[in-house]
Image (cartoon, rainbow, N blue to C red; front, side, top):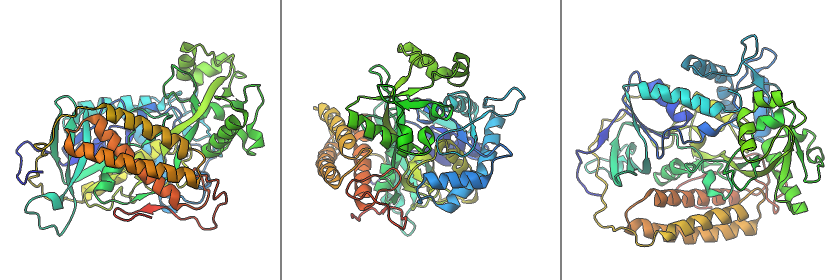
Length: 536
């Protein structure tokens, strides 16, 4: 990087990377007092939040209780949930729902006007607030409209995070208080790397589902924030816990289409190809067991029988019921020739949610002053070893408010003149096919070796291949102009390394991490914390 300031640096009070529920909520909460930039690498509507079907978990019914919601979360989290974080999110959840109502989100209601509550796997009561079966899309549409009308929010679509800028990289900085002072982002339209400067930066970049061959996530889920924070010196926690959603639609023309947890919550039954129901043989809670239990059961039955998929049957419900509760699932399946009111839905497990992430406290603060991480990019301690269904959207909103309050109470460092991005010693790549081949190789061996069931040998093989890929990608990164594909691949390989390191460090089977070499659960539940510069 050049040791000179650049007048092209874009200066704001707060930089937010990501335009899902976590990022949009934070931007709106801060926009009355601060100039906020939202940096998102695709169109603003293309994040994971918009894909969320089921809903938002919150205690709303008088017959329900915070204690019950906490208990359900702790049970699903297999002993690894942080109690303070769990209580904090559960107790703040109703306030988050009320805020969304005030924003204008059209939640589904009963005939008397009360919110309609559904139930999902792992919950002991009906507490899922929703907008039919397209909650995320409805919430996103409402908040995006608000963001676009705000004079204090600048939206930078098609801008990909390259790296964070820390104060020790700035010429003339004494280096006594290393902190985050901005970031570099690639403008995918002009191919120019821009410099953004702000005293506060918040990562709301989502998870890393695209590290796996089969995922319910959109193409944006490449672990950008987790990888960038790790490179900047932040610890990460519990990266071995990747939630595989049990029921992704199995169809050659249906890319990453999720069949909501709520289908099982409303009586959907999982069947083998011959029509045999199998979940009661795996768990007393049957189809309402937590996702890790259901995903492993499906994986077991598929491998045992050599099946390409299993089936989820909701056809015992009336057509009117299905069209009212699952209109989008019904319509999408019908487009593909599947009438779910008459026939079962072919489903397979797929990578769905990253329970670990950048280690952050109850204010969203990371190890690096000036840098916050919330939502799926962060590890707040709420999810433990397995996320309880519909706890993720509410986590986004609760920590958006917490981080916003913290930012308001901290003036932040004065804006510095930041170094420009220097690409004077690189050239255009002449073999971009290397990127696509490495991307494909990574996702395939992560699926084969670091999937629902793991072994020491599989993890060792994955680690060996990751090391080879990291060398190739770093050489490519150092010698050629950056592209979005290269940046995403670089981040995915880094996140894959963190997942494998974490999985190899856990010598037990707990929650989402199941090892054939360590099938038992240890008496003491401890998080897996990785520190930059330290391996093993």
